[in-house]
Image (tube, rainbow, N blue to C red; front, top):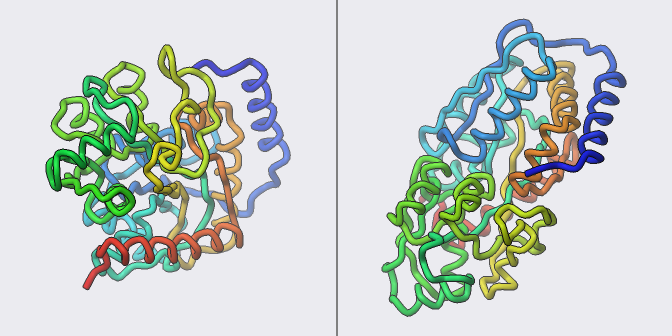
Length: 333
């Protein structure tokens, strides 16, 4: 996607301002920083982590390297527990998905987001209902009608993990429309997109960034976005469509909303000056033209929060997930 010159100049100016205005920090890493991704490779969290890593290198934002490590075991529990257990270690950070809430609720693993140090919400990620472009369904209503006509457990919905965001959305679709899918879990969003291109499943609720390449190539078709408003991005992705051309699922007759956290945490017990280093670092990253381009390419909601506002959002999101998972019967017994 080609960004306008004005947009690039503005982003560059923001970055320059962030770099010049930033005060001298009281602490910075003196050894490599482990950047944990509690999910598999190729998915949205992995892509964002590796972009952050690349921006840090390109703009020389850290003296020490940022090393991405995937710890996807136990639906992300492996990654979150590694951060929880690294109490006081400022050389570890983790990028969170909404499995921050869903994994402990679904599995009973002894972990809660309050046992880490919230640093920054980087963005909110959307979910889109996708089908294979060779299939006849042009709208979400047509697809749901076909699923309903086929009867229960005839169509396969692919997603990332069990009792996680993708399956929660699938359960919400079922509740809203009266259909019943076979839910097929995979390790990462990249694999989910490949399975849909291969016609091994009938649909997915992948994030935009996880399926944009296949959409651009004419292999997948987006039917609706699970948000209250259409995505604002109007540059064409294909010859005929932009993200903004995708209707909301409510518009399409599937009244289901869900957005996912992309946030950064540190272990518990870190010092204020250590947290301040990463808040400052992430502010610089968001000011780069690279980040602005990535936000548009992946059709992200660009909401960014730190401090009390971030903690308040996390508290409300935890309550919302408990309600959704209770209704779906996904809570650990």
